[in-house]
Structures are given as structure tokens and as C-alpha cells.
Length: 171
Image (cartoon, rainbow, N blue to C red; front, side):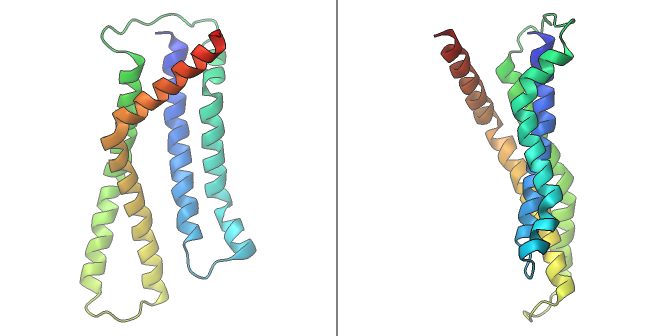
């Protein structure tokens, strides 16, 4: 496997992180009660910027990797490890990273709500903000678990789309 292929995988790992964090950051802001119009849009700019940067980086990863490894693009022999296995490891690794990094936050916020809420009264503004912090942690945790469980499937789909593109170029 050429060094540029390994670089593509690493660049796409970073791009996936940027895109997912940006998506959930934007989603969390969009779901806030009371924000609308210009205030909502201006609050979403950092998240949308991260999401768009991640998508663009994902798309240009092959060209960027070729540029980075231009003179030293030698084959690296990793016996028994193919590109599908590496993509699977990356998806599962990112999933574990998301799930494990947000698990403590989810557990902490659930404990906070269980202890602080003895009645079903209406939430005040501070509790509303705390709920959105819980939702942010929880969505990241669920996305991580989803990637861990479906990492092999996503890696297979990525490899299939890559194979289709190569086949289309050869025709």
C-alpha cells in the first residue's frame, strides 16, 4: 500500500472528526429555544464552518495525500492488512473516541438531572441550558456507538464507492 493511501485514511479521519463535531455543534445551537434569525445563524457559523471544512477536506484528501507524499510515495508492506481493514479500524477508532470521551459527560448530566429534579415542575433557563449540554454529550455518545457498531459496513461502502470510481475511470 502506498504511503499516500495511508495519508488519505489519516486525513479523512481528521475530516470525519471535523464534520461530525461541526454537525452536532450546529444541531445543538439550532435546537435551542429562543434563538432565531440572524442570532441563530451567527451562533451556528463556527459549527457550520467546521462541518464544511470537514466535508471539503474529505473530498480533497486523495489529492492532498498525493501532494504530501509526492517524492516518497513508496509501497509500505503491511502483511495481512488491507485498505478495508484500515478503514474499519479508523471508523471504529473514531466511534470509540466519541463514545468514550462523552460517556462521562452523559453519566454526569444524567446524575445531575436525577438528583436535582424531585418534581416535574417547569424548567428554568439554567436547567434548560443544562439539558442542551446533556443533549450535546448524548448525541456525541450515540454517534460514537453507531460508528463502533457499523464501522465495518461504512468501510465496505467506502471501498465499494472507491472501486466504482476506479472502474468508471478505466472505461
